[in-house]
Image 1 (cartoon, rainbow, N blue to C red):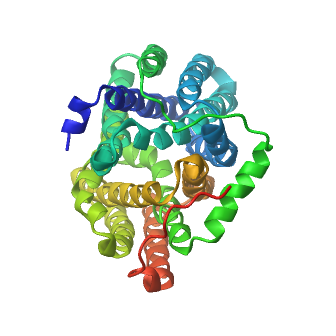
Image 2 (image 1 turned 120 degrees about the horizontal axis):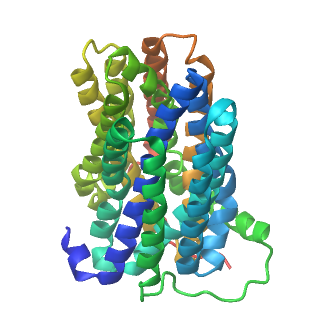
Length: 406
């Protein structure tokens, strides 16, 4: 499977560029959560930072997906890397009484860049490899987020404990410059064609939505990630749990790293499902349910190590869920609509994440962590059961042919 990296220089450059961007996300976030907790002594600011990040991305994704289809994706990726660099510079001003609001502004700016980066990079993957390599490329690409969540979270936690959060922010700045240089070196076109577009952007968004309207199986696939998203409020509770267990900065980094390790292993473990369409919908329902059940276990874990195991397996299921649904969507959607459909897919998931993190953030300082995590896990489990009941009649349906709408 990894041979797709060694044989394809351009895909390898895109892959490592994605590693840097996703690593920067958590190399910034873990130190920032620790810094806000130290400066404000309130968990709500961490919840607001997490929900603002995902909320801004969700709101911009429909337009960002249209941009990914209408303009050169390579130029989009480089521009967003440089915009993210400016946003990271704002994190150096997170100090004193205004730390919370300044952090929200900086993270919102960083999220704007991320919103335009994600659909352009994911839509470019099928154009970086030959069709026989697509399933392997998708599985490998699906590991980028998990890989760098491990590295970014664990190393970020360690460096914050040993040095300072601001040192981590500086490293991220240099990394983003490296990502832009890697993307600049890609020679293979990132889309089939970039031509003049006479239609307004919102007309293009409408076209993507009309395409989804006639695709029931595709609509089912873009609602899959919401299950894990609705349970993602657990992340807001992580800093509180780290303090309760007495593991502080390093422990918080390890918790996020366990999450990333699960997200890394999940796509590899569920890879066989990608070539078995009849397994797809049952596999998605199973992965959603497993995420919820494992977090219910985490809620009642008496030991830090046992909680790490539960976090790992929960996100192993979540990572498999993500790559299975993404691969099916990539196969079914034509290139000229892929950015918009990918954006719609991610937007639905991000809105679920935002709602979950915001609601949990409101109660994190007044409700027990055990109850909050239990409710998040049960929410995902109930969603999975409902989704399976609604989509069971689609299980044996063949994928709808990918026909463009002109």
